[in-house]
Image (tube, rainbow, N blue to C red; front, side, top):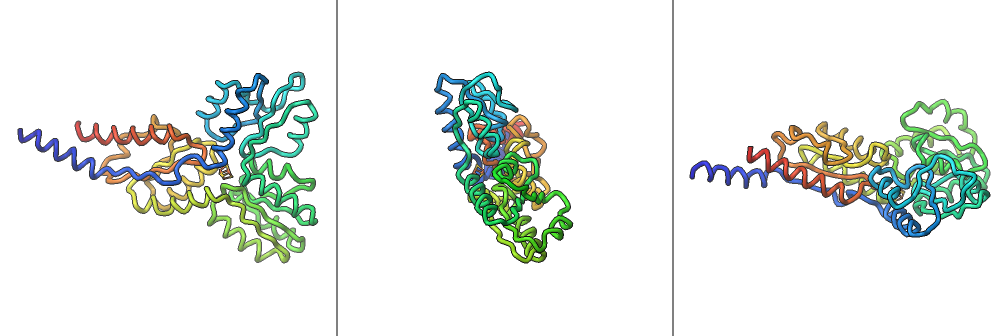
Length: 303
Ligand code: SF4
């Protein structure tokens, strides 16, 4: 009888102790939801649908779309026709022009926030200003932005050394746009540096609102929880950013793609777990992670 009572107390304590705090902004942003809605809608068409790369950076979603018949390709086939679906991160102008020239119908699922970056970059180029893009050099979105322009844009990748590049253009009128998912604090530092060197500089902070909200939330989550779990694809730039920010604040931060990657020992002597998820992480994956954590907490207790 005594043992059972202890077990009940331990069970209640564990329930109290192991709090799971899910960030309000975890999961899909509106741009991803919109792109998926468009993709699922056109998947009903009898025509073959092609998509260059991933519609969004999440393997589960890409597989789901492939089951619906949407083909992921590197280059558009010349001998067939169908629909060319433009991913949420956008495409360069040449790719779209090529698709149209080959006779494909183009369905554009580019996020409106990314479209806005394209618009700003093109307008600034028309004003004869050098366009600078702050972003990950090889990311689809950055390639899509520079692919809108006639002249070569300068990419400032925060991971690289770029001071020499800036010094070379100090007398050139420059306009800056930012990849929508960049780290806001790092971008602010680069902005100050650019202002210090370039005399005529226009700066457009094009980090999107969902990214800003997620990054604000991830500043408190690691402080308020013993452990942080960031859920999302290893290909996802915005998930990577969340992980970088969280792990700089709380060393016990783990980046997982799904619930199978959770290790029970992470939860030892943990009172609370904060969870966030990238903009392309499906709700189902987040739910599975939460359920898995709950069941580990319960099993720890019962063992
Ligand atoms: S992260 Fe921002 S820019 Fe990217 S799809 Fe979502 S809302 Fe659009």
